[in-house]
Amino acid sequence: RQYITVIVSIVFVGFQLYATLSGAVTAQILRSTHLAFIQLLAFLLFPATKKMPRNTLPWYDIVLGLIGAACWMYIAVNYHMYGKGLDNTLVNRSGNNTILDVIIAIIGILILFESCRRIVGLPIMIIAAVFILFAFVGKYLPGFLHHRGYSVQRVVCHLFYNTEGIMGTPIGACSTFIFLFILFGALLEKTGIGQFFIDLCNAIAGSASGGPAKVAILSSALLGTVSGSSVSNTVGSGSFTIPMMKKLGYKGEFAGAVEAAASTGGQIMPPIMGAAAFLMAESLGLPYIVIVKAAIIPAILYFTGIFITVHLEAKKLGLKGLPKEQLPKALPLLLKKGYMIIPLVIIILFLCIGKTAVFSALMGIVACLLIGMITSFVDLSCGRKPTFNGKDLVEVICAAARNIISVAIACGMAGIIIGIVTLTGLGLKLG
Image (tube, rainbow, N blue to C red):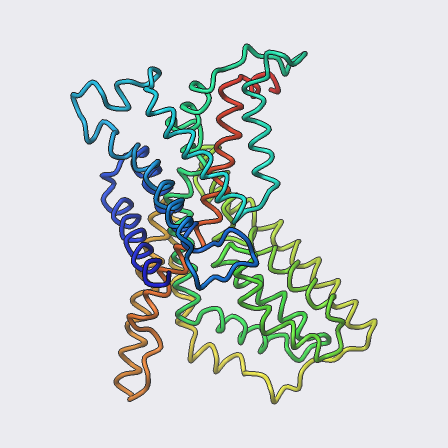
């Protein structure tokens, strides 16, 4: 399982970077190929149930992964780029799909539902299923829910082959700048910027009243500027701050709650926010920097509120901070590792001068790689073990490929909901 996953992840990331840098891949081919890799990796990495061991790879997972990938590659292979001038391409027979088209669409949607059950969970899967059911039974419903009803062929082909369905705006955003920022976040974590943020927050607030809890808030805010993921934020800082809070005297549930609440705020902490921010920019047709500007004040207010709550709780319990001799010094730390903030500064700079989110993310990735190589060269020159090498780069690629799966699956299910809303005219009626 490990070797297969590594190879697929490397090819996946290579394709994504080629598509972004060249601009030669059309939207339908990029999105369908993106989903093909997602479906294959979903069944390679996530077992059917949580109780099953992750170090084994059942034959049925391989079969499901390959069939799911083949369904989406069917679009890429049969699109007009590969059959220009032929009458049997998907573009030329749009609206008059064959039986084979319908069968592949049904299988592809069913496998997407199964991967959603494994990775994202039942709620969004049930909601999407209800919307699909609505497309079939709408002619029997009263009031504004009534519509003329649609056949199985019309529904599945609309959802599977059109850019108004599964391959709609959410997957479009996921296959471009969301993926790049997830890759950027994985690079930053591997180059040590996460630990740098935690050390800096310790130097600033570690000795204050309830210091570790305040460190958790500050570090989550700083990590949120580069990750946009509440899960990776919790793992990155929580493994360090939660034990410190418990040691200081906080109850375990309060320590966990502080870290979870603070890490969740990372999704609205500019400049790199959660996937929803990119979808907002794409759906509204606004530059991403506009969404970033709108999020600054809410993000500051969010973390300020948690900070005040923690401070009052610390005063109430009489909790003190950590001894200063156990904490790093802010100025020496900045002088030694301050360069680690350069990639973040580069992204903010390019966003502020009007560059796209894709270009800014690419420049941030380049900056991370350059810093990693320079740091490793310095380490080798001093006779130390390199802090960033080829193995680390492979781990970054695998982490990015794994982290994008849940986002892509959720975006695909959201595409089903959007597709049914546009097909049935429900959106116009609600409006």
